Amino acid sequence: MRSVCALSLVKPEKVDDYMTALYKRFWIDLEPVSKPEVFGKVLAEVLSSKEDAKKVLQKMSGAEAKDLLKANTDEAFESGSFGAPWFEAENEKGEKHGFWGINHLGLMIEFLDLDRQKDRSLRSAL
Image (cartoon, rainbow, N blue to C red):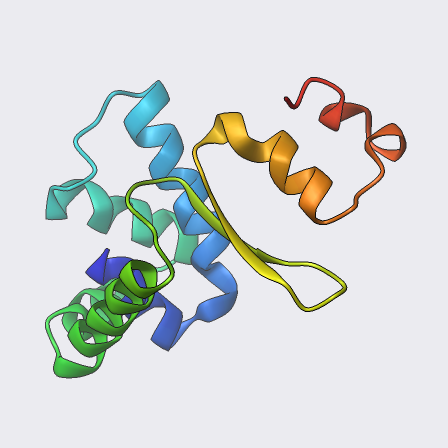
């Protein structure tokens, strides 16, 4: 998670791509993404640069990335998160609610008052 925080400080626009690549490496390629040699390689691929990946890896051990991770963790605990995936949503009325687990996406869709009919991928959500 420190690598994600460091990347968000260096190239925030690449965080989604990095998370997607890590997900694939872990769940599809069955690689240990917690090991620096694996997530370092993923960073280099996502950033298309070994030099940029090196900058992120160096930033990872600095106070700024560590502090950001601590702040994010504290925020997650304060919002009631107790696992992943955790989604915190705010509806049009300004109400906030947390949803834990993929099986609660349907409840989150209802809370946000989204129209399931507009997006066929939402049809199977509980």
